[in-house]
Image 1 (tube, rainbow, N blue to C red):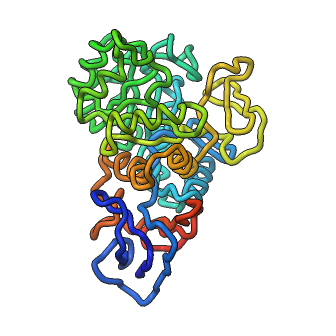
Image 2 (cartoon, helix red, strand yellow):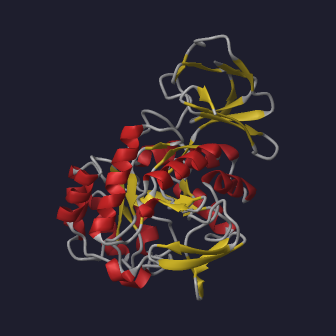
Image 3 (cartoon, rainbow, N blue to C red):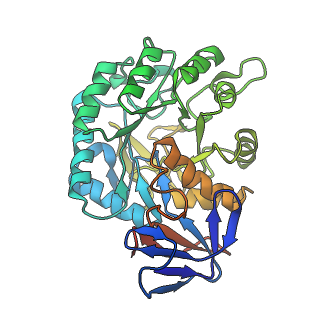
Length: 375
């Protein structure tokens, strides 16, 4: 396949005029067959990578059903999100184990849709004061033995775990997680600057939905945000759905951290792709009105988004983020944050041929190629 005539995403230059060739599932220097795709008027970008979302089309990753995870994978691929690392909620260990086993079984089946590259355990190692939509009944102090059991159940598929670093044993937990090949993200926390800085210096390299469920950045109390900025390896997530973060703060944060570090996530719920109404979420009920999801009866408590990652990319661009920077924040940076950047995130020779063509005018999807096959 040869994709020609488009503006191709380049990690260093933004967009360049060149062909993208594939041979089977990989990007190659020359085309492996005679198929030609005209990408005139399009941006040619890598398939998106979402490292923090919970579900869509009526299904939730935490339900741990094979059918539900398949529907999630199918929908995400239709939105140009080709690699997914769905997030579990704060739940009892037996349900977390079921989530992990379901992830491993799905990967073994290889039954189509976006590739489920792993699991993100957003709970239960969080703090009560900033639990947000998480169920406080199941919060748990950092427990490396539990994490080891969950990673075993997942057959090594847990890629990311969110942690409140003020909880007892957090620094030791971060070091144990690294031994298991798991990245640690700081979030759902009331940690002060010193505590957060210690966590990042111990090896935590990610910040869960920056600004949300953490203390604000203050001039005498910089907190998690200030600590994340000062440790260059830390990548912060932003939920760019137009609800969670003001456009000015999105612009400010990209300017502060730089395009090399920013990760856009959707934090999408089972209500994504569904009509307004009430939906279960993590043992609670949420209500959805338009683009806003809140805990039922608590309209001030946001409960994730109902926007796909591709929708978040478009929102970021509408807020003034350059297209190339928004694309990087939805592709290479999240891939790097969970250790799959050797496979995806750019359109370089040798990477997997997962490609999305976007109309240059409105960023609508014109074509999706997943591992060399047109979707």
